[in-house]
Length: 315
Length: 315
Image (tube, rainbow over all chains, first blue to last red; front, side):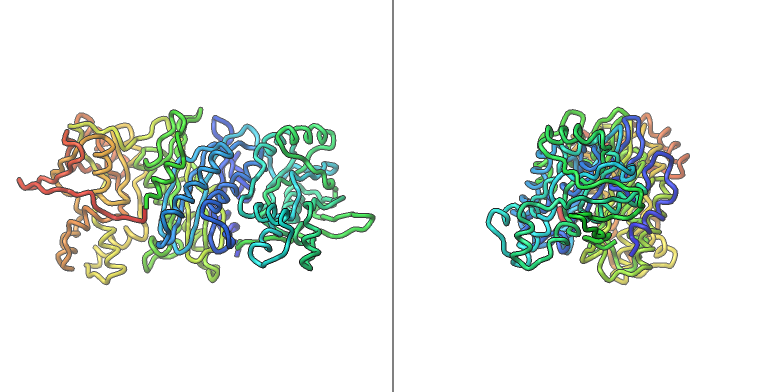
C-alpha cells in the first residue's frame, strides 16, 4: 500500500533537526529541547479482541504511545484522545473509556489535556502524546560488538490472543498472564527512562521481535547474531500443548510492548543495574555484527536465519 | 452522552497553568512559551459528504485543527495524522490522501512530521497539531462594551451541503462558492494571527454562529446584542429559491471556519486594518452586554432571541 511512504513523500523536505518520518516518534527542535510527538490509533475490528472492555481498549491505546516513548527513553508529558463511538454505545461504555484513560494517566503520570469525540461505525481511539527530551534514542546507532538486549520475555501476547480468540488451552496461571498481556499491556516506561543513557539504538516491539531486530539492523547498518531467544516462561509448554510452533509465537508475534535495543558491551553491567533499579530487567540475547542486514540465531552450534517477518497491519 | 465531560473528569486535576479541558485547544506551559495542542478526527460517514475526494477529506481534517489555531491566534508548527483505511481502498485514494496532506502542509506552512495507518471499516483521519505561543486567545475574556466581530460571512457551508446532498438549486457562481466552502474549507490562519493582539475572546465557528456566540457569552460571563447577521452574499436568494428559512443556514449551520471573537471598541479600527493587511476582513456584528448568557438580534427595531442551537456531533 505504501501509505506511510506516500505520507512521507507528501511531507516533503523537513527542516534540519527534524527527524525524518518513519522513526517511532516524531522529533523536532524547540528551546526546551527536542519535542517528541507520537500518534497511534486503535481500531476496534483489528485491535480489540473479544473480551477486551472499553476501559482496556482506552488504556491500551495510551499504552501504544507510551511504549514508543519508553523505547526512546523520553518521559511523556501530556496526551489527547480523539474518539469515534458507535451510535449505540451506552453510558457504561463511555464511563469505561474515561476510566481507562484515567488508569493510563495515573499509571504513567501523563496529563490528559483534551479530547474530541465523534460518531463512527466502530470504536476508534487515537492517542496523540507529547514529551520533551534532551536526547532521543534512535533506531540507528548500533555498532558491531554492541550487545542486543530486550527488556523482557516474548511470546505472551501471541499466546494470550490465541487463548482469547481461538480457544487455545493453557494452565490457569499461564492463561492469566498471557491474557493480561493482551488486555492490559504494560510498557516499561521507568525501565526505558533508566536505560536511555546506555542505549545506542532502540525501538519497541509492537511489530514483533524479528521485525524490531531487522529494523535496528537496517537503520544502523549492522547485522545481529542471537545467542538465545527471549522466550517467556511457559510459552514452550503452551505451544506444545496446542500443537503450535513456538518460533512464530516468540519471534514473529506482535503487540509486544518490550524494548529491543543495543548497549555497548562495557555498559552492559551498569545498564542491567539501572533496569533492575527501575523495577525491570535487561536480557542480553546476542550482539551486533558487521554483516549488514543479516540476522541469525546460533543455538547449540546450529545457525538459523531470523527472517524479517511478523505482525503486519495495513501499511 | 457526556463523553467530553467523562473524559474531563477522568483527567482529574491538571497542574497550574494547564488549560482546563473543553477549550478549543489544550495549553500547557514549557520554557518556549505555552504548548498549544489539538486533535480533531474526521469520520467518513458523518464528515465526508458525497462528492468529497480523499484528497479533500485529508485537507479538511488538517483544516479543522488549523481553524482552532487561527481562532486562538497561534501559529501551528507541526502535525501528525493517524489514518484508518478501508481494506478495499485503492492506490489512487492513498495518493489522494497524501496529496491532501501536502496541500495543507504547504498552504499553512505546517510541517507534517509523521503518521500511523490502520485498517478500518470506514475512512477515519485524525490530525494532531502542535504550536507554541506566548499568548493564547481564550473563550473567556470578553467584557461588556466589547465589539463582537467575525472574520467572514456565514451560510455558505450549510448551503453547499444542501447542494451536494439534497439537490438544492443555485446559480453556478453561488453553487461553486458554496460547494467549495464544504469541500475545501479555508480557515483564516493569517487573519487569526494578525488579530490575536486585539482579540479579548475568540473561538472558531465549526459548531455554527449561534453556538460560538453563546459559548463566548457563557465563558466570559456576558451577553451579546447583534445589530446584524453576517449573511453571505447570495445566501438569502438561495434560501428563497429553495423554500428554506435563511436563519438556520446563517445562524445555526455548522462546519463554518470563520473566527468569532471580541475586540475592545477602541481597537476596532486597528484590528480591522490588521485583518485587511492579512488578506481578510473583520465584520463587526454587535456588542457584548451585561445580560449574562442572553444573545439577541436587534434589527430594524425588532428584537429576536438567538438560541444556543446548531450543529451537533455526538458529544
